[in-house]
Picture 1 (spheres, rainbow, N blue to C red):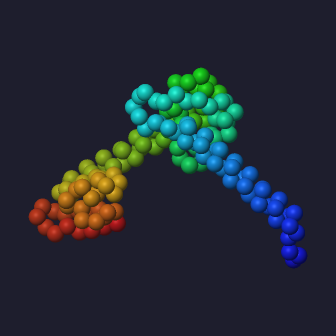
Picture 2 (picture 1 turned 90 degrees about the horizontal axis):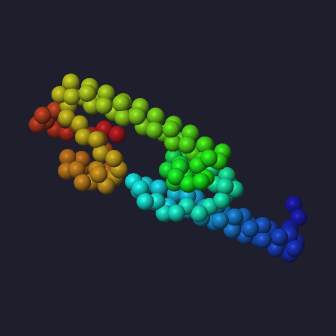
Picture 3 (picture 1 turned 90 degrees about the vertical axis):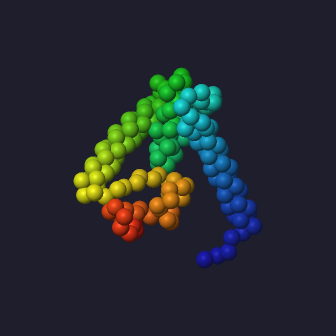
Length: 153
């Protein structure tokens, strides 16, 4: 393999720089779409074009944030474009998956209750740290009555 010439090295660096700028631009678009998406209402104004939404939709979908994207787009003029339909589909799918997950959790709690096992559901490391009976982050502990707690992962 021959070493790169000075021109080839410069062109390679320029190409990398252009890719970095493009990645930053797309990241900024993702940030615009997701800004305030967790709020119940009063979203910040979404100022992107349909072309930009088309460009960023695959990134939102692949990252699992398409449903949040729909929350931002649904009350804008963009709601009728094809990319918005993809986001809406992801929102509906995640809503169904969430409901199924909730039903499974209820079933597990019901079975544990029948076995006289007290269970605590905590979401996230912060919630685990706040609950006194859970000693370390990521551990699910259960026990019967006054017996020792057992740790399972």
